[in-house]
Image (cartoon, rainbow, N blue to C red; front, side):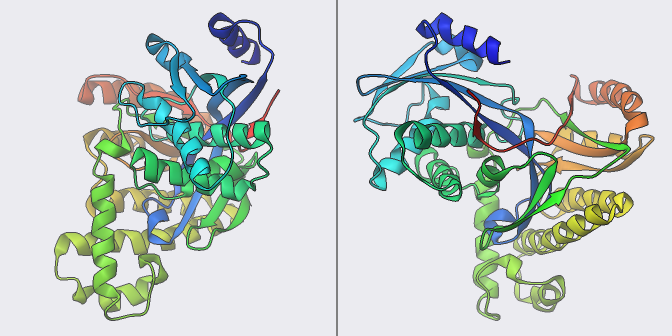
Length: 387
C-alpha cells in the first residue's frame, strides 16, 4: 500500500520528499444514536482507512488531491481564504479542521501538497469523513508542532464537522479513530469521555461488515431530525427529573416517566436511546465474559429497536439483517452507523462465513436488484504517522 500511494503522489506532485499519515475507519459494535444523547458507545478502529501523503510548501497554498475523486484533479485554496466548497465537497472535511484550529488561535501559516487515498467505501457508514478529519488533524499537529493532545484533536475534528461541514455528529467517530487500539474495542461514555479498552476476543467467530451499497450521507439523511426529536424528549423529561441527557436515565427510570411524553414518535425515539445505552453496557460485559450468544442477542435487539423505534433502517439494511438472521452459524446481526443505508455487522461462526456470503449475496440481489459487498474486519490502531 505504501508504494502504491507514493507512486500516486509522485504522478501528481513529483518526487516524494514528505511524510505519510493514516487514520482508520471505525465500526460501532453497538450503541447507535446514543453518542449525542450522553450515552455509551462501543466502537473499534478498522484496518481500512485514509492515507495522507503530504509535503510542506513555501507559500500559503493548500493543494488537495484525492485518488478517490481523481476526476476533480488538484483543488487549490488559499490559507487566508478558507471557505466551504460545493464543487470539491470532500475537501471541506480537512479544511474544516484548519478553520477550527485557526479560530482557536493555532497558527497555521504554511501550505501543503496533499494526496489522499481512502479504502473505506464512501457513504457506507464506516466514518470516511471523520477519518479524513483525524488524519488531517494529526498531520497538522505533527508537521507544525502544535502540541495538541490526542483527545483535543478528536474534539477539534468533531467541531470541524459540526461547525464547518454542518453535520451535528456526536464524538464517537472521531474518538474511535483517534484513540483506537489494535485488537481492542472501546467502551466510551460520551458524557464525560471516560473510556475503557475491552479485548476483542471472539475466537472461532468473525465479524463480517456487509455494505448495502446504498450510499448515505449524514447531511442528506434524517440524522439531524432524529437529533432534534431527542432534544424535544429531553426538554419534556427535564421538567420532571434532574437530568442533562437522555442517557442519564436507567430503563427503570425511563419507564416511570414515559407517560409524560405524549407524542408517540418522540416517545419511541427516547425509548430507543435509553434502552440502547443499557444494551451497550451489557454487550461489553458479555464480550469480556466470552458470552457470544448474549452478545449476539443484544445485536439483534439493537437492530429491532433501530428499525421500530428510531426508524433509521430502510429496506436495504433490514433485508441484509433479516437474511443474516436466517443463516447457519450467525449469532447476531444489526445495522451499524447512522442508518438510511450503509452497513450491517454480523457475528458468525468462522466455519460458516463462505456459505453466508454466497447465500446472502444471492438473496439480497434477488430482492434489492444489486449485490452487497462483504468485509472481514480486523481491529486496528488509531490515527498515526507511518512514514
